[in-house]
Amino acid sequence: MTATKGLEGIVATTSSISSIIDGVLTYRGINIDDLAENATFEEVVYLLWYGKLPNRSELDQLLKDLNAYAAVPSQVIEQIKLYPKNTNSMAALRSAVSCLALYDEEANDMSSEANLRKAIKLQAQIPSIIAAFARIREGKEPIAPKSDATSIAQNFLYMLIGKEPDKVAIEALDKALVLHADHELNASTFAARVTVATLSDIYSGVTSAIGALKGPLHGGANEAVMAMLEEIGTYENVESYINTKLENKEKIMGFGHRVYKNGDPRAKHLQKMSHELGKITGNMNWYNMSIKIEDLVTGQKGLKPNVDFYSASVYTSLEIPRDLFTPIFAISRTSGWTAHILEQYENNRLIRPRAEYTGLSNQKYIPIENR
Ligand code: ACO
Image (cartoon, rainbow, N blue to C red; front, side, top):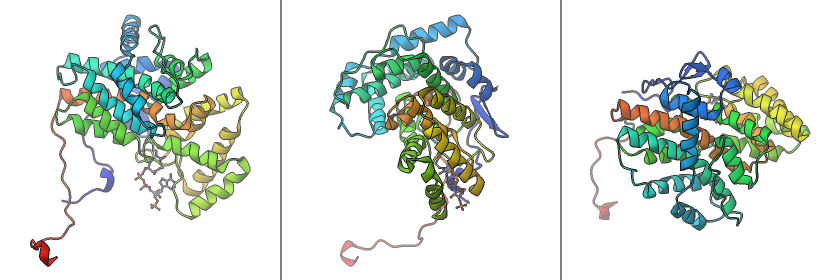
């Protein structure tokens, strides 16, 4: 038995949800470029769950269900109020999502109808949890979700800022949600599938996934990118900062990918958005710095930006606090996680690989007084 570090290149399951073939990403066979240009996030959620694009009445019904379930149980809101004000936002989300299960009577109902309903609840409530957390830590009361929201992006921004968000912000967030929705067997989705393959419940699966997304080698990179941009501060500082990092063999957040070696197809959409939003807000600094960083990192290391790199300047242009970037990634990826969880349940087998043992052998127990 020989281990493959990081399971690189290992095909661990079959899935019909999304594919990365020759650097091309598809959801249910539809190219991400096509979806990014044309689909709403709710259409993508439906596509991931049901395997086809919704017709008008199916989409209306999904929106109705998402609006109906968007309110978070009051007990969960009360618990969020008890979190320390400086709690890490992904830790808060992980705890609150775990807590949702306590107040859902069908949390452990494993029927497919109940599991699908729970997927809708999670997709509806995760944005409300994040917005509530963001307000509570500022000493404000959470805002109840709109009952007639036209999109998750609209409802989330409304709950976050406490007024009607503008159209540009809604459209930009919606597109970012489309781009982050699913990504084959990424680390957090794998974590979700491993958890539910024990026939544990969907809340446990999504809680595991949030824990995996939190790390800076995965979803946490978008926040780390913005921290880097802020640390660099000005366009003039970019070159020396990046050169020093590369000379020291330090990683530049938002670059590189386990699967894409010739570029992440989602990055160009986010780059375009970052450029457009920079023009609209009149602040091109983050975009210009990002372009310079890309030139240097790609030029010297051949590494291309991944989905997290330009999403940092996009969310900053939307005036979203830096530590909500990864939770927003979770809003989007909840659609993919739950689609994969439902797929795992449909054709389940326990996921239990082996480890190549590299420890000592033929050791004897030593009584404690002799150690
Ligand atoms: N900056 C500088 N060098 C890098 C970077 C980077 N961002 N990424 C990879 N490298 C280098 C490594 O140092 C290594 O060099 P070496 O062979 O000289 O030691 C080589 O490229 C291979 O890198 P690994 O880390 O082994 O590649 P792996 O496939 O394991 O990791 C990962 C992929 C985690 C995405 C990596 O590229 C990375 O850490 N990037 C920065 C974090 C990041 O942006 N994560 C988000 C990924 S997208 C997502 O999850 C949503």
